[in-house]
Each structure stands twice: as C-alpha cells, then as structure tokens.
Image (cartoon, rainbow, N blue to C red; front, side, top):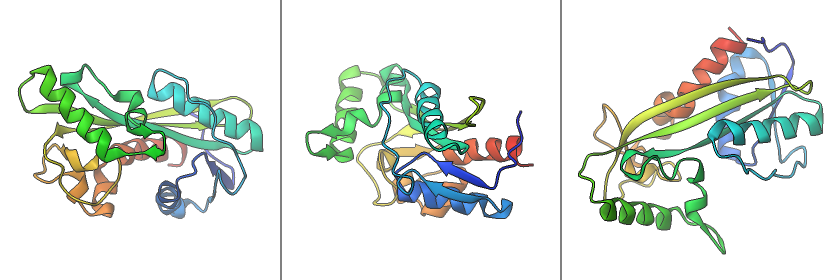
Length: 202
C-alpha cells in the first residue's frame, strides 16, 4: 500500500457536495483538496462495467491531465431481486433528455421489483469504490458497502439519488430521512473512506 505524502489532492468530481465531504474528512491531515471544476477538467466517458473500472477511468484521467494525485469514486445500488441491477448503471436509470430524474428512477426500480414477483424484503446494498491514482500510473483501490433493503413508498427529502427508498440495516428510517452527517458516518462512502485513510494516511 502506497502512503500519501503529497500536499495537494485532486478530487475527480464536479459534485460540490461530494467535494465538501472529502475536504471535511481530510482536514486532520493538512491536505489541500481541489476539485475537477477548479481545474477545468472534462468528465471522461465512464464505459466500465464495474464500479472499480469506472473509478479508475476517472482517477487516472485526472491524474494524467494535472500531474496531481487524484481521488475518484464510483457508486450505486445493487438489488438482489433484480440480480444486482441497477449496479454500475444506477445513474443511467435516472437519465432523461433533460438531465437526471431520480424520482423517475426510483419509480422504475419499484416497477421492476413488482414485476420480478420476488417477495419483500428486497435486500440491497449501496456500493462505493474509491480509487486513488498517481501520475506515474500507480493506484490503490478501496471498496465500501452499506447493506440494507429497498422500501416503498419513497420516504424523506434528505440525501440524493435513491436515498428515499433505501433503509440501511439496523435502522427503521431511510437514507432520505436521515441527517446528512449521520448518514455520512455510516454510508458505503464512509466505509470506503475509512479504508482509504487507514491505508494511505495512518
């Protein structure tokens, strides 16, 4: 495992919320965190078939373009009754001609679960894979998981994506009903980040 010694880290995302979350997590280590938007980086085509492939595409493209070590993530929800779908295509299920519509995507997910005829509980997991890539081509991979189940109808206005239909194991509320900072402590991304920090900083 390669230790992170650099002073600057590029986070290969245009999502300000995700960038703020990562800055907060890395504050104790004195690392300057910059985002893809600040560096005018385009978003590369994510044509991988797994979370790790897509995270690698983003991290290596950003590291190569800037000469900085780059951190990226790819995440999604896997539902057992749908044979793991939408999985790596989680965001694609929300695509419309006018941007992403996650309410539509959640409705589509529920329709497919009903069509599957599989009984509840509809077990599922949110997955996140973090990849830290250096300009020399080396990378480290950190997978994170949060198991739970899909519930219906949608509940809560917090979070984003599929959060209103995902109830994590050990809780009786959805991610959509959970305080953002509480969710950030237990989420799939938090799991991956713990491994990232333990592997590259501790």
